[in-house]
Length: 376
Image (cartoon, rainbow, N blue to C red; front, side, top):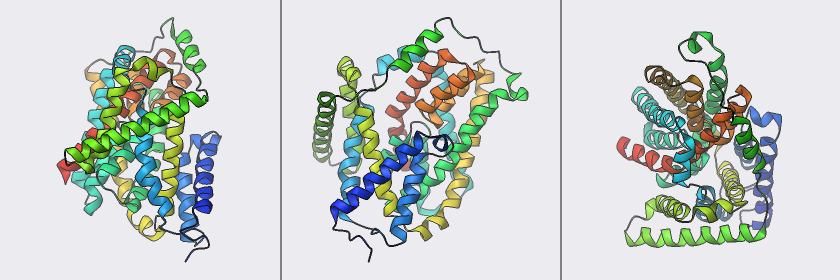
């Protein structure tokens, strides 16, 4: 029994939204640059449920995972215009393809070295998706491979520690003389500052016409995808159908989708609600016993990834800055990659890094599911 019963929808809703607020607030502060708000949401929710304040299982959690998660996927992918991505990513896209292959290689190496048990193939898939795309792909793959809430919580918590390590390595590597001496020096283009200013100026707004239209479109995409999945007797891959239909819409109507404001932010809110629900449904004892193996697995993936990216960049005469930005787009996502590029003075690589990160969102779910199926 818990202090707040499982059928008290309003009280649980207040807590889930409060935890989502906590995650967003942490992400906007200095501590968020060192630890993801997602980790705090998961840990706070686990603390509340494992101390008996909220239940370990409730219909509200099921609603978030079963209905709000599919709704979030289109909202996060409506900007996936492939023509724009390839047009603006330039040479960095080649490096990103190498980085994606390096992630897969790291997963295969780690999987062959460690005995992870039943969670192994699932973890391999979600880590592939997460470290080619981002959290949206991590989440989508976990749904497609039927990862339990407890398994998901363990996997994403372990991955957060590894992602922080990867971020630190990406920042440090360009300063290590033993590495940089093998690569040509960075030379900024004259238009870099103008591109950066235009990128920084494009801040999202909040328009009810845009928000309601985007949510309505997301509902329509989910409905159509569900119908197609049932028609083809492939309901377990409903998330993949949602992804395909969303990308089709994004590329058939790129101008309309590009003008939408607030769609991505609403999608992120739904995802943070899911993280809170997952944390609330996680048994702490089972979490601690499983996290260490996945932490080691993730570290192997990251180290193999970075080693292969650097070796390939050297052999193919790719600049170190381009390799780091491409690797960052895969490992830590477009927003953080843009911050790395700005901090290093690589201003003309901000847009290519963002474009590659968005492309990762588009392809990573399919690759992650394929990896799980191959290793199962």
